[in-house]
Length: 319
Image 1 (spheres, rainbow, N blue to C red):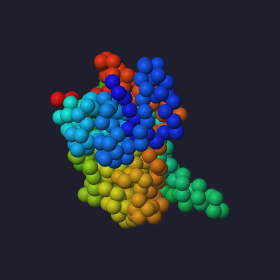
Image 2: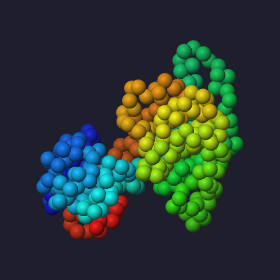
Image 3: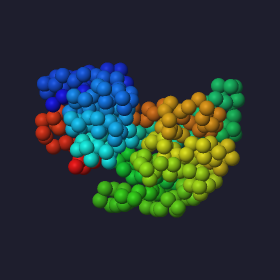
Image 4: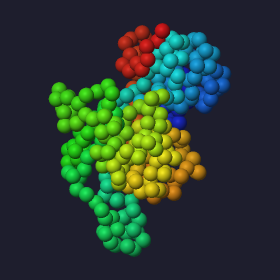
């Protein structure tokens, strides 16, 4: 089988190359960015390692030889899963890499907001040595964190936040906290219950048609006055204009985003002039260890599929 990288912005692909060499595959690195690039350069590929290039229905129709796509990461929102399934293409991701990194980054953002770390650092550097500028700050054991999405990363965040003393509630259509996996400390609630109860709302659900702009102006209006919003999942889940308005009105005390609907966040985004909105450049997943783990697992999944062995992380069911 022919294996190719459709695109990859990593500093190198040494980890993958070593795995492919050992398995007897010579895998070229392409730089596809568009549908036309994929159609022009991936026609002879059976397996594609993909980062950002868009696999749309048009692309699948033009690539009848294609059998598998492996996404670098958890999200697959640049792949038309319905079209892939109809075309008989197996889509895979890597859902269990970097889980500690993302959950830890979400905790760091949460605590930075609650403890006013960023504005107090700026005040101190400006010569204002006055803790009162941070008032009000509340004890963590008095605060409730509400999670939207209780998958692997969400549950890790919940476990760590619970250990720090926070009360934890959560919403997930497909998962119920339970004693068997030690998550019975999470109180399951509906979204309508979560919004007005949570001092911090943390998003861990995938981006789908159903969750696109899940947190819009109507949802934000139901948030508790002075609440905080954390998103290390996918940017399209939040209506960013509505978020900017909620921050401007001070209905929300702050927000922290590691992902935005368009990346990089456009220069004219109203969020840039909101100092109560912390923004990081889609880095929550990263550590040296997580990057190596991701690269290794992507390459190993491709080799398994090429050899006809069972795969670990199927996302769809091909026709």
